[in-house]
Image 1: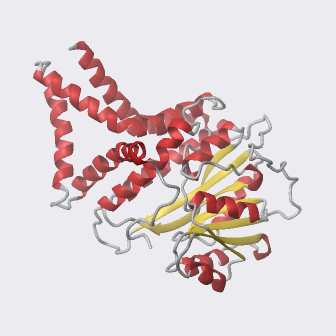
Image 2: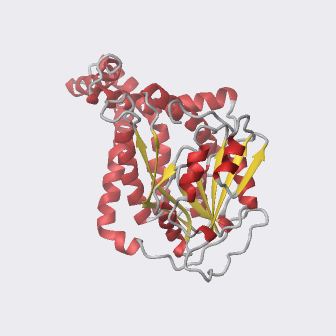
Image 3: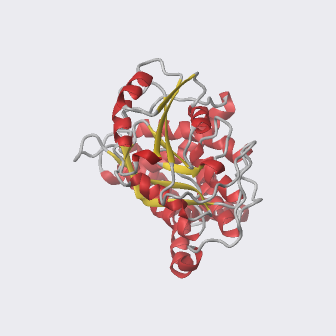
Length: 400
């Protein structure tokens, strides 16, 4: 019985730590150390090995860096003209901005509509996935900074200037902005509660950035130095691969909340689950063979961040399953009323998630969101182990 108690309480403690305790600990540390932690590090950064990477360029004469904004697109004829117009309307000197649309095996009018809308360079590439389309665009990029966005993401006018401003420090190699998910029908109670989670996630990301570096970014709005761009396996997305690899090469990966973008939220929770399941099928290769597990190159605080915010978060389905199994066994063995209460709480969470399908009450929807999104790492792992992961995917439901 002692072994079951240890398993139960260890799993419960790890779940509470990754979901809540970690954020509270970051907040407490930031209150004490943030001013000192925000100072640039003294040691010079090392340029990542790109296979013939450029040496770090000298500071440009112009106070703003030249930027190549890259939009990778597959069959985005519905939104690409609006995206190009949004990019060209950014409050950034036009002579310093190069807009590249990289068409990843498009079978529709994406390329022509991007040209007609005024893109500086449109690449028509065979379909090889978003990452390879971005790689091809970086090869043709002329900017000192390469910024990336999705075809369905729309940036605020000052977003590029705010994002580029992060690179005033030579120690910053990667910067991501803030993406806001918007519902198409305002004033309705959507089944997808991604907005609740995302606000919490961004708060944690801001604390990580203040103290060290972020552990993940997002594909809607981010940038790197061109000479620090890292070519990764095409099934391993930039959102997770670039931040920790930048840290391993002595650079900071930062969050710039003032650089803002928006995109449509997946309207249904099942659609969100499918999106996260697909994302996790790309995440597990990064975790297990992409270098994330190796602590080499991590400062101690950042290693704790990776463990707490990434590894434990992805292990949460297994922790929940172990905690539930141990709890059932303890109740069956007559371990006491405490374990009856903890089992009732776990079953209540599952029941609330089931009832959310019929009763669209906000607390029930949040419970359902938690259960399904917590299950998504396990589903993504199963998909990857069963049939591998392709380098490309289709747009999520309702996001265009």
